[in-house]
Amino acid sequence: MVEKTNHHMTSDEFREAGRELVDWIADYYDFVENRPVVPDVEPGDIRSRLPAHPPESGESFDAIMRDVDRVIMPGITHWQSPNFFAYFPSNTSFPSILGEMMSAGLGVQGMVWKTSPACTELETHVMDWVVELLGLPSRFLSTGKGGGVIQDTASSAVLCAMLAARERVTKGVSNKTGAPVNLVAYTSTQAHSSVQKAARIAGIGDENIRMIEVDDTFAMNPVALEKAIREDREAGKIPFFVSATVGTTSSMAMDNVFSISKLLDEQIWLHVDAAMAGSAAVCPELRGMHDGLEFADSYCFNPHKWLFTNFDCSCFFVADRNALTNALSILPEYLRTAEHAAGAIDYRDWQVPLGRRFRALKLWFVIRHYGSKGLQSHVRQHIELAKEFETWVSQSKQFELVARRSLNTVCFAHQQGNAATEAVLQAVNATGKLFASHTKLNDRYTIRMVVGGRDTEHRHVLAAWNNFCTTADEVIAP
Ligand SMILES: *Cc1c(COP(=O)(O)O)cnc(C)c1O
Image (cartoon, rainbow, N blue to C red):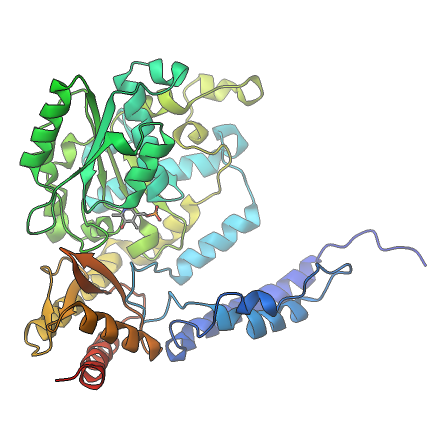
């Protein structure tokens, strides 16, 4: 018998399996609301159901799909469930899934313009659209000195911003000999941990990042920032980077970008992290949160959180693209192209990795499918639902607000204290009927209710509230 030499799936087999998978995904969305949001499994349960060794002979697509249903699905946390209110939304949508599928299908590497011109040019163009869509300052447009790039995450964005800032303040020295020991970065106690991680990776170090105190709205206190910068300068240090947060992770608090920007000079890079909140700027009436952004050096928000675009898609903008590429560009001979020499964008110089996927497709599909009006309408619906939830909490005899509602996020607690709040949250999540997560604000154990699911409607939010109330009746002694 002649041994088979071609083991690939044929295009006809792919057509059939692909149609089946698209149906499978559509069914998943049609019925996901009936599933327990969080799976009932222990660590190791999923692995124990998988064969110990890889197969020697290839298996059929049907066999693989059977194991997806049998082994994988029981271990899925249903982020796309309309009853998912934890952490942050990571919503996606069918246009986005189609764009992702196309990106996988084309399988291009967009590291330099030449390796796929459309990958680069669509990205540049869509990022300019996003500036208009969110009403961002024109300094972030690629038609001027700035420009946008799609990163995998907000963590990568703040790292790239910090590297650019480090390079700018040391005028090239840090790339040659490493970061000087006297550089200092600033963010608030409520900022995302990715700022601290960036400081580690950029060689700044935990001891050289100041966590500035916040006011009673959990926003960075500009007076405390000014004092910290002054004291560091007096001690011979070089303040070089501030990361302000528009929409903090715990409570969606808004740093005042305008006040912060007024304290800084040319030496200090201002980055604005609006990972979750930024999407809300599709609505003109919500753009006040970006006041002062015209003085920022960089800005980031994640369409993969609240703009119906599946992970990963983080939009990162800089006011001066040369500051970014000065820090990150190393041009080996094998990547030299005439087009780059003539000014074409090579996005490899705007990020940490070399290789990059064609992420702009999914964002382009999403923006074209919904239009600005469609996106505004859904974001407004989420905020209205959060508002209503806030009203229920404020009128409740058992629960109370821990912070002012901000956009789609409501932070609340049981009136009897931390142990009661924690008990209620755990009991509610154990019902499988919804999933909410927690944080601590001023040492108060706090439940966070974040509304942003593609399919989340009034009835889901109301059912969640009723669940909190009846569960509290059951688990808390009056
Ligand atoms: C979610 C979040 C991040 C981190 O997002 P990644 O894209 O996963 O790195 C950073 N900052 C804020 C404010 C966030 O909400």
